[in-house]
Each structure stands twice: as C-alpha cells, then as structure tokens.
Image 1: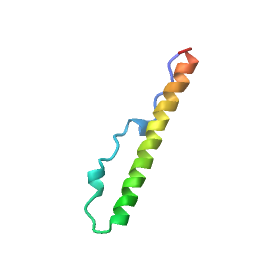
Image 2: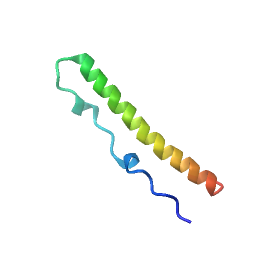
Image 3: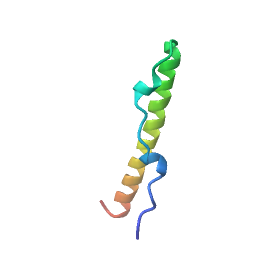
Image 4: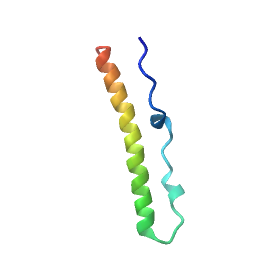
Length: 60
C-alpha cells in the first residue's frame, strides 16, 4: 500500500526574504516577511505531519 502523495504546497520552495525587500515602509516589509514565514512554516508542518503519520502507520 502506497502512502498518499505529499500535498504540492509542501514541495514549494520558501520565499527568499530578500525578494520581499525594496519598499520604504518598513512596517509593510516586516509584515510581508512575517506572512512569508508563516506560510512556509505551514507547508513544513504539512510535510512533518505526513511523515509522522506514515511512520506511525508502518510502525516506525
């Protein structure tokens, strides 16, 4: 039995924070960086949950 495929979101690379820089409003830049980190952490969490679920199912 094969495990379900990993959600595509978990395979997307995280945004380089340097790509979010360039404006003069530092509050906006900090907000964009925070949003990017939250999104990336969500994808990373999906991958960890999937791995842990699979490991538990196969007795690992």
